[in-house]
Length: 558
Image (cartoon, rainbow, N blue to C red; front, top):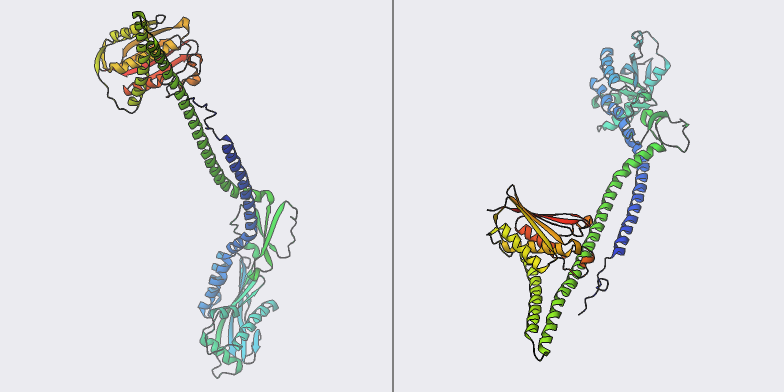
């Protein structure tokens, strides 16, 4: 039965599928990078708009602490602050909150049926000032007290006091004395928020508020007087410390008036703004970044995503490479098996054909002369030996590879062993020049059958792969540091450097004119397995057209 060619066998490496796969993942890789960059760009541009609120919240945290926590502390004094205590209280504020520029302290009182010249008078309710002090880094020591007995207060200070006093009166006038007002109602009605200013009255007890409510509608027989303190805080928004928690997004953050008209209106800049609110409602945070600055932030956000995409792409390429390598290895193995089957068939076919022809001649001959009988017997014997040798090599190779045999240890004389090998091959190949050299070695223990197979294979190779005029082999055996070193040096065609790493592979054949007649590709692979089984090493050094030397190192057992 004819053996199909490799091309006809139906086996092929589907390179087009691999190329399509690589092309597809490359397109997906580029598309993923594009989408990742677009996402990063939109993300950072969105952050430029939304992160302004975070910067605002971080920047006004000190103000919120001042407004929600520090201001209510005034009420702890119940209206009995004096100038000295007020000065100490204000010092802590000025030290901790630099945006507070000046504090005016009003030492005030609430009275019934008493007209206050410097204050608010509505019906029987009056709120007036006893003295007024100012504190701040730019207030000189001789100008701390700005109002007192027998002095005149300026209109602005009086208006500030009356404005909050009127708010207090309005709240008390509407007060439902049957239920406690909420802290939110109290705080909002005892404070007055104006641009760059906060006025704050200390919050009295609920029982005092009830009395205030009575004082509005009638004169009380006891003519009560209640101490009330008011502090007016003048604020400087320029002293607010901006906390830019996105320095890689906002190149510059400034406090500007709401009416500020920016000069950076070119397309090279991105700008944004957000109003401060409260007493700073006339001001805003103004954000500005160059587009090149924002692009750096976009790239810093994009690169980690791109790195993950690249790693995923590399993994896909690795998968593609492994698939390709697997297909390539399978193709080579298929070719090796195909060549092995072809050559093995040829190796079997030749002796079988010769045996068949000799048998037919014997069968068809009417009589056979002694000479013909001897000739046919020799032919049948030689061809049977060829078949038997080939089968034994295959069987031995399989047994050694699977470690199905044991090493038989016998003591041999190396000189007699080499001479016997040389005699056999010189008888077989009269034109083969064989020589040997032995140094420091006479006897050692090994498996003579396996060692004989090793010698036979290397000697056969040396003869087969040498030109007719250079069929020679020199064998050396030396004992070096408890190791037996065997060298087989011929003057043959040599082995190309690119093939050195392949010659010991099973079913592999170097392509040259000496292999055209057919070779199974088991010889050197068999030698490698033999040496490994004998716990040794085999190496090769070769120069093309100069010759090859095989070096075998075996353990020395005496």
